[in-house]
Image (cartoon, rainbow, N blue to C red; front, side, top):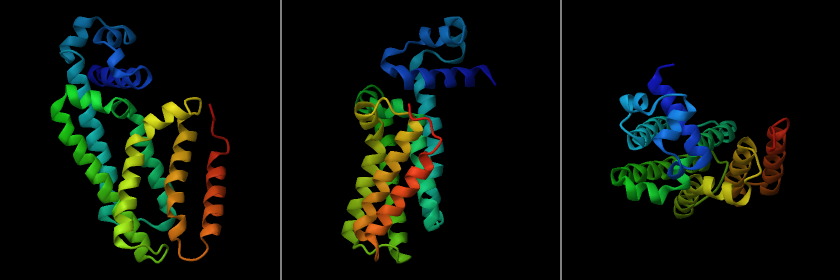
Length: 215
């Protein structure tokens, strides 16, 4: 692995674990057993590291978000897809935990982050409308658009909620719970057998959690 990539990887881990506001470039250098001067050769301080991490996150997340817009998901793929979305957010969760502070300090990131949220809404709407077309749910346009916004909000604020309400849970458990919370919102709109759908969804979540380390 190139030195630059090692710096980014170590920085991401530190930012996620301790919060980027509490981590200095010297801390990053110490973790890598590297002199601050060597780190400065690759990144002129912490700010360029944060910007590069955002570019990496933006590229990955856009690619994942575009997938259901370009090609409809099979019904059975939705849980896995939502898990991947939550996992992407978890991988770069320091952005979300201090979102307001970051966009205030890095003004150019605000519009780019807003564009990502708008793409989340578009993707969620595409999934919901596809489920309606497939006859799996019966939902009006306005309700579908409102649900898409709620889904996007949950994806955006989940890291903060998780760290506040269930910090003892492992990330995989928290992600599965997040997916369950999101998908269960479809229950009132399921075409026939909403109670059965909720029971099956609960059973599927419990099955996915088997063998997963809880703490």
